[in-house]
Image (tube, rainbow, N blue to C red):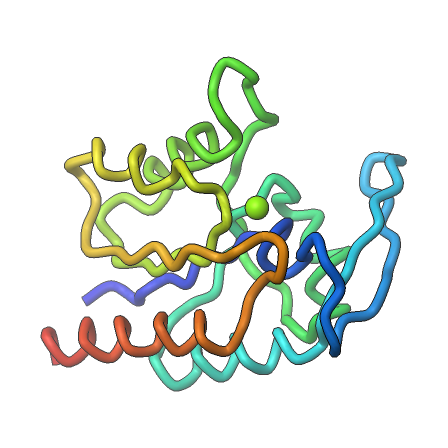
Length: 165
Ligand SMILES: [Mg+2]
């Protein structure tokens, strides 16, 4: 079986809207635009632990694309990761729909679990019959990624590899 992917969003997932304990403030300025970030250094170990245990690969699925490796990964404890190439948002589509189209095209039939806060991603993926098995773990952008989300991903990956193992 193909290596399962853990698709990882940044804004609303690693970078929530509201500050909870464990988060630190940062600034990032990709393309010269300054963004304020809330990032949690516990996220990296949580995710790399999941990937190592499950034989999965973490891949950025974010409008930050490869800039996430410069501005986000080092601050949360993630290594350099591949990224889904997502072109700049076309306002004819919602943020989630535009991203989901490009994620679907890139993943092909590989199994994936996707940690994402955009609500209309499931609808777009459901229309794509070429996808393999997948799970979307919806994240509340107010609070971002929690251990519960990672546990959901783990359970699904365990079932996936168990089915094929
Ligand atoms: Mg997001």
